[in-house]
Image (tube, rainbow, N blue to C red; front, top):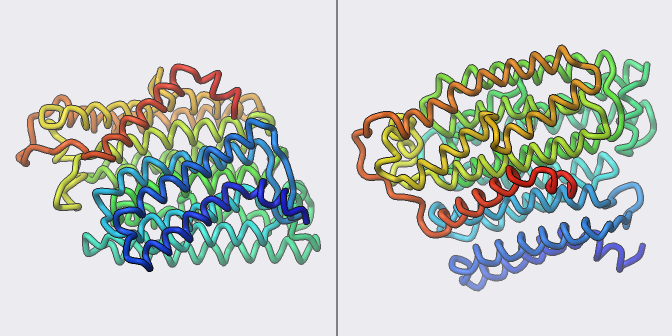
Length: 461
C-alpha cells in the first residue's frame, strides 16, 4: 500500500476527518459554540476544493484495491455533494446554537464520500450506514414540534429496513457469485440465475427505500416536516444525491434489460405521478417539498433507463440543478419563532409585500423545480428524457414527461400565494438573516451560472 496514494486519493475524506477531530477538541475545551460552524465550513470547503482539483487534474488511483478507488468522475461527484453542503451549514446558524449539528453533518458527509468510491459492497454498506446514522440524530436534534419524535422513529425503522434489505441482496449475490465486488452487479443484471436476479431486486429496493420511491416513500413527508429546515434541506438534497450517485456507480455502463427494465420504469413513474399529485394537497411547504422530492427521485431513477454513456452526466447535472434550487428555497424561507407556522402555505400569502427578497428567491426556485425554461430544472429534465428516448424507451419517456406536467400546478400555486394573494394575517415576515441570506445569494449565483452556461457545466462533469 502506497502511503502517498492513500493520502492523495482520500484527501477529501481526510480533510473531513480533520474537521471532525477539530470539532471534538473544541467541544471538549468548551469553545465549540462559536467556532464550530467556521471549522465545519472550512473543512467542507477544503474537501470540495481538493476533490475538484484532483478531478480536473485527471487523478485516478486505487489505494485499496477492490475496496476503494477514485477517478475524475467520482471525485467530481464528491466535489458536487460537498459544495451543496455549504449553504446547509450557512443556513443552520439561526437554528442551531450548539456544535452538535456541524459534527454530525461532517460525520454523515464522510459516509457520503466513501459511498462514491466504493468498489465492494462492504465499503458501500459502511458508507451507507455512516451517512445514515447521524441523519437519524439530526431529525431529533431540534425538537421543536411533538411529531419530530415520530418522524425520527419512522425514518429510523425504515432506514433499518433498507439496510437489512440491502444486506440480504448482497448475501445472495455473494452466495451465488462468490464475489463482493461492485463490478458483479452489472453482470447480475443480465444473468439468468434466479438468485442473482433476486439479489439485484433486493439491492435496488433498498436504494428505493433510501430515495423514497413509491411505495417505499411513507417516511419522507413526516421526516421532512418534523425536522428543522437545515436538516430537511440536507435530507432532500445531499442524502438523495449520495444515494443516486451510488446507484449510478452500481449500474456502471450496463444496459437495463427486461425484467429489471419494468421495475426501474414503473415504480419511478408511479413516484413521479403520486409525488406530484400528493404535493397538490399539502398545506406545508416542507411537506410539499417532501412529495416533490419523491417525484424528483422518480426522474433521477428514470435516468437508469437511458444509455450508459450519458447516464452519469445527466444525473449529476440534474442533482446540481435540483440541489441548488431546493437549497435556495430553504435558505430564503423567512424566519419565525413557531416552526410549525414557518412554512405554512397560508402564511406565504402576500409574502412579496412583507419580504420581497424571500418571495423572489422562493419564486425562482419554484419555477426551476417545475421544469420551466430557461431555468436549470428544465435542462436537467431534458437531458434525462432525451437519454431515455435515445435508448429506445420512447413510451416510458412520454409517460414520464406527462407525469412531470402535474408538478407545475403546485409550484405555481406557491408563486400565486406569494405574489397574487392578499396579505396573510401574520406579522411582517423578516427576511433571512446574515448567513442564511448569504446562502441564498450563493445558491442564486450558482443557479444562474448553470442556466446561462449549461454547456460549460456539462463539459466539466
